[in-house]
Image (cartoon, rainbow, N blue to C red; front, side):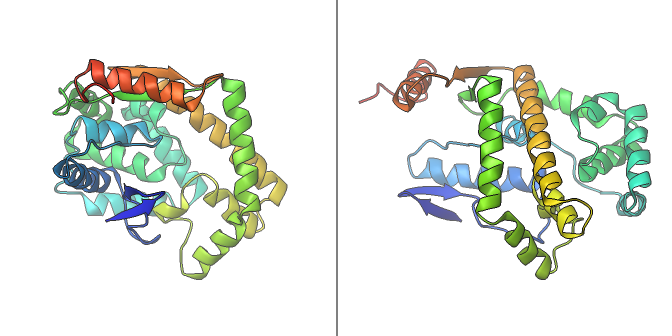
Length: 267
């Protein structure tokens, strides 16, 4: 499915309900189908977004060995995670058996924490070691992995202004509507930055001012972790945006695509 935005088909937009299950494996499957469809029409897919883990999964066709899930173990872990103390225990356990994953996964991302613990429980191998092995695979695609970068102070200012805009455009009302439809804080769609903090505000755990402060702070931390991730990835091209026109940036990207023989001479 795709959605028309300014005349350009966009895929994987408005294709799931908020209460539907979603994870990196499902993204990988859906994105590969979309890429095949785009390529079949004679166009080059452009994958855009900020989640490096998901980009890596698609680009290198990583095998997450999702078969034979241990549902009993996962249920036990989810029950333990239902309390704040239990969440802390799970994260401490992850630090013990898989320090690399604990460093890469935020303590609040319980779904990924449990997935990493489940993988270790089933295989005796840290999932970080498995993923590192998968990363060494050669990509089946000719690609340009471009990361647009800004000066940190400029980026953080843009993040703060974006959060203010989200609030002005009705984030609180949106979350209220989702909760009225039966969405809970445990659902994947409600775990995103901005949503869980807004739920805490609506539940009386935070003032609106405190919620906005935490959203801004955690989004800045997330942006910092993103850049750390991208710097560790292989074959990444960083493109500076500060003080440049969009046309200049586009021209640089086109030239790099030509250098890799992904496109012909730009007309």
